[in-house]
Length: 172
Image 1 (cartoon, rainbow, N blue to C red):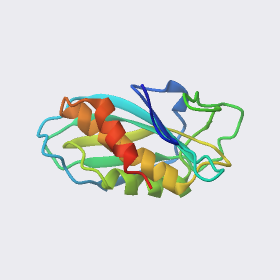
Image 2: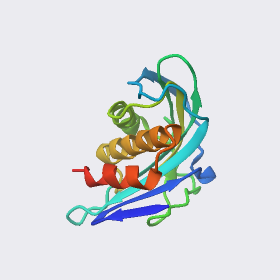
Image 3: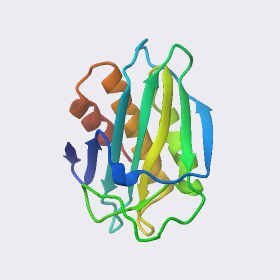
Image 4: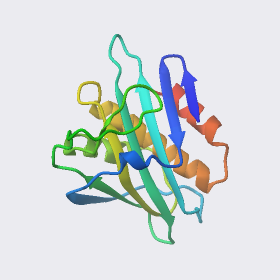
């Protein structure tokens, strides 16, 4: 599904296999829980594109959620190596992306995921794509926040498109 609100666009997919990447380490964090006690196992990927004064900040983030009784845990697979080896991630919104989640964007993903509550369980970020010119920490933070919104909507059996529209209307 692609949602457009003015100059803001988001694509929500179950998965984008071309966004899988080799990772060097996992960053593990805790997050706030939603009121949903039992989520469902789910995989989701989001891609965002914002038209902002001649710039086109963009990011793609995806992961796999497995419900559990404990506190929400986030694992982020960080790719320290330069992955610009000719492989690319299919984009639903513009030109192809480079697979991977460099450390300079990983911290922004943590911040974005922490801004929205997620169901109790483990969310592992293992899909990502970036544009070497247009991507930014803010784009990854917004994409991660949107991913948390999608995971919570899936777990709560809520309308995903409405949740996405509401989230992107609130972007700076």
